[in-house]
Structures are given as structure tokens and as C-alpha cells.
Length: 288
Length: 237
Image (cartoon, rainbow over the protein chains, first blue to last red):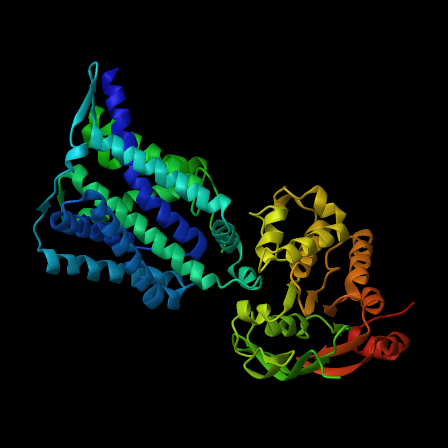
């Protein structure tokens, strides 16, 4: 039984990290209709910037804030200079964001070198709790708490604020939002930067979990995030949350009970869901 | 008297197609102007060009002396335009309340009071106030769309085919609503329903193949069956 408890917590922690990537990806897809391949790069940059600032300041929270700031800045630059000219052109979006992914991933190697850099967990969450025969990593609980707080925050933003109201309306008809006297482009930039910040935060939180940062760590997590977005239903925030938990738990369980199947488990799950419910679990397909 | 809204020889393209090839019109404060014409004549594009959703390539559009040409839609609208599109433009993901709130530029006492009086004009919306807009009937959606255009203190309201796709009994209700606020606002109404156009409008413009061809008091058009047949295809029994 204790194994299940530990796997459950591990799965939720993984799910929380994937959620940070997938939520931004899904909202960007839902509101902007942009298939964004820069998310993995932003994840990497979040990791590197946090390690760098953690080394300078010794403060984990300042490191997280620095990663978020880097994500926002990069998101704003990507959106304004590269993505905005290709709104509505999916092929161009894919090519441009793939190009940005390649350039900015290589830039990381240029700045911080090609080899992995070791990373420590902050002291205050480096330990474990032992309840009976169940060993719980404090850092994984911390990840779950952050994931829940971010989910509550996004839910509040989307459903309880004017900004969220405009985002929901913009998902359906950006033109009509403009006809209400609202500059939707400002919200587009904000959403892109917000999604980028979440990805960077994900990277910053991922690095202490695995113990190092390296330039290849973005691609796997980006693929997982895309799987979550498709699984949960494109453009659906709830779909991202539920999909992340499902993927996190699946990976945790399968990697314990039958490790050779781990790589395939998420894809098999995706195939199963899409054959039964092609629009994804929460089915709010992009309406553009 | 100076016109409130003036279009001078505007030209608008949609992709490679030259849709408006010289539309000119003048709307004076307090009047209801009806734009008539056959399907595809350019009526909807004229309204969309005014609000900047289909930007005009050349010509002149001024509202109360402010040049609208080249302004993005959100700026054009904020000069004082309420826009009711052909497909209602209702946000299905929002409630009726949120659809009204999103249209308000400011949430001050005056705007909220105006919203309340607009809701008095459309009691059906009051009953569905907290419901998702996706649950509204066609007539209710049209009323919500008009209500949204009225919540701000706009100088002019542009309404695109409010009777389209609605049952005759609902069309009557929409017409009653238009007549109720007609005297308080300046209106441009694009309408295919000739009876509705005549009962609401003071003056008319006929657009044919992207050009304004004729204008005058609506009564003149109402009395001239030959004109109706020529430009609108209206066949009187």
C-alpha cells in the first residue's frame, strides 16, 4: 500500500510540473490559435536562469522569480517580433517556433556550455517525511503545492476577472472583442508572455527535482505537454489540469511496475483517449 | 447641420476582391438611416469598414470630425460606435451578464444605470441574466447584441440585418425595441426586410455593386414600387 501512496505523490508532482508547461501551451493555443514549439526552450531557459541566479543570490525564491521574469521577457519578444506576423498561419507558426527553439536552445549551450550543470534542492525542502513505511520527498510536496496554487490562480484569473472574461471571449472571436473597444493584441501578448513564464517556472522547478540542468531537457517535457494538451482537449484549461495529473500518475505507475513500457505509456493513453473521444477529455476544441 | 458620420468615396478590398468601389453617405444626428441593397452589394462591408474590421483602402470616414480611416477597430469603436453584427457576435463562453460587462468601457454609475435601463428594454435578458449566452434563442441573442451596443454612451449605433433568420413574431419584437430607442440614438440599419426598414428608417441609401446609387427619404422609396423592384427585387402583390 505504501508503494501506491509514494507513487501517487510522485505522479502528482510530475503532473504538477507537466501542468505548468501544458497550461500555458493550451491557453496560447486556445486564445491565439498558435502552435508554439518554443515552450521547451522556455522551459530550459527557466532552468538555466534559476540555477544561475540561485548561485548568485543563494535564494531559491529569487531564482524562481528570475526564471519567471526571463520567461515573460522572452515570451514578449517572441510574440511581438516573430509570432504576431504569422497569426492565422499555422504552417508558418510551426516553422518559426521550431526555428526559435533551435536557436535559443543552442544559445544556452553557448552561454552555459554543453555539459549538464549540477543543481541542488534548497535546504528547506531537501529532506523527506516518513509516515509509517511511506517516504515522502518534501520537494515533491512543494511541487504539488506550487501546481495547485498556480491552477487556482489561473482558474481565478480566467473565471473571476475582467482579463479572464476577455480571454474567454477572445477564444471565440478576437474580432468581436476588438469591436467591443478592447485592444485584443495587448491580451495576446500578455497571454503569450504568461504562458512563457509558466514554462520557465516549470523548468526552474524541474531542475532541482532531477539534480541537474542540460540543454536537452526541454524536448521530452514539451512532448509530454503536447500530449496533455491533446488529451485534455485543445484550449481547455481544465483539460490541461486533469490531463497533467493523468499523465503524471500513468508515468509514475508504469515506470515502477513495468519500466520498459514507460516511454510508450503516454502515447498509448493518448491513442486510447483519441479513439474514444477525438476532441480530448474536455473537448473545447479551438474554435478558429 | 454637419453630418455626424460621413463616408466619402470609400474603397474596400476583401482579399483580391474589390467589394466597395465608392460608397459615400452622410448620417445626421438623431436620424435612422437604412442601407438597402441586394445580397452581396456591400452593405455589411460598409459597416465593417466603418468600425475598421474590414479596413477601407481609400476614401474618408469621419465620425463627429474624427477621422476613422486607418484606426484599429478598438480605437474606431471608442470614438462612439455601437456595433451589432449580422451574426450577433455573442460570446457563447460568457454569461449574459458578462456579455454586457465586456461591452462597457467603464463601470461607473452612469454606465450601470444605462445597463439597467437597457435591460428594461429587453426583459427577456433579465430572466437569463446569469445564464450562459449559448443557451439563448436567436431572438434573445439579437436582443443581447443590441443591448450591448446601447450600454455605452455611443454617438451612433450600427445594426446589421437584425431580422435575419428570426421568426416573424421575434422580428416584431426586435422592431419594437428599435423603435423604442430610435429617438434617443443615431442609427444606421442594414436591412433586407423592407417592411422593417421602412418602419424604422428616416432616410435610405441603396448600395449596388459596391457603390451608393441612390438616397432620399424612406417614404419616397416606400411609395415608388419601380425603384423597389429595380434595386431591391421587391415584388408587391
